[in-house]
Image (cartoon, rainbow, N blue to C red; front, side):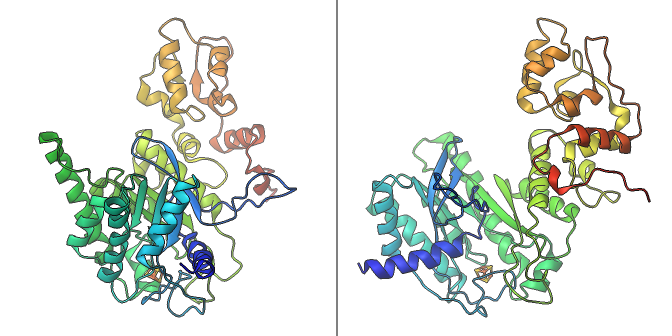
Length: 419
Ligand code: SF4
């Protein structure tokens, strides 16, 4: 092996892979300061979660950054004048095994630009996973990025060797995709997702009958959307994500704020800030839908097309629905407790357990770790002190913001303007 050449390829192809956030830890940009420990700005290793919830570190690379497509939002697009490289199948296998033996990684996240055709590329990604599993007896985690437009047969084969598969939808709306990636077709994303979902269901069903049936993509499938590249609203994004969760049983939809990489009239200009806060709010809203029983229409609708940037989506919903409060912490069902701003799932559990033995008061709630600066306006409990929620929601919002210590508070000016 020519080590210098492999090292050079690794630099190019790990750097290109950092724009793919289908692995959880991408996107952080904290550099090492004052000879401190660690550096999240680098590329090459990312983290993901296995089927049983363990966090694993993965070697994150592209097989190649050559691409026949010219998607305007992508550094790898064919018209971009960048250094190109490609790993051979054997090189990726060797790198994975070497890093694994040194204990640097617990698995591989392999993505790729599209060279020649979707099927040729997909077939090569599968060869890497197959070699690792069958020839190297590798039992570490493998996440394969599936190539839009790849055939059903190849998608089926990929799931036999990978733990997780992801087909990145990239642009949340069909219109946006048409504008920025006219060579791509919405169907090319949907068909592989459908094939993977069908196979996952089929294998699950068969496995119930016989233990000998092999595992098929046991960590499920995920997808990624770039946000802020086109003029889509948060409502568009959330309905689109909801569709993928429901229709194709996505384990995760990842939201990735658009990083301006090109000077193109169709895109936000170079130097535009990456919408990190919007990304964060979308993850919070996504969480409310998956774990707190909210419907998309309660969070975003024709009256609220976009999420509030200065407060979290649950608080925003509560302020728009003051008639539902205060909620009696000693009597309310679990589903209502989950709707109180500042009360997380663990706190709901503590409340339900705690109230079996005694009537809960403010001290109890504080000891459960509830964010009372927000929650107190939405709760009644066993106490003489009651915080009024009978004030104008706008003023209530200002009160809460003034009392909260949000790490984002520096971005907002809470002072009321005179006009
Ligand atoms: S097909 Fe994928 S890799 Fe190629 S330009 Fe489009 S987004 Fe980038």
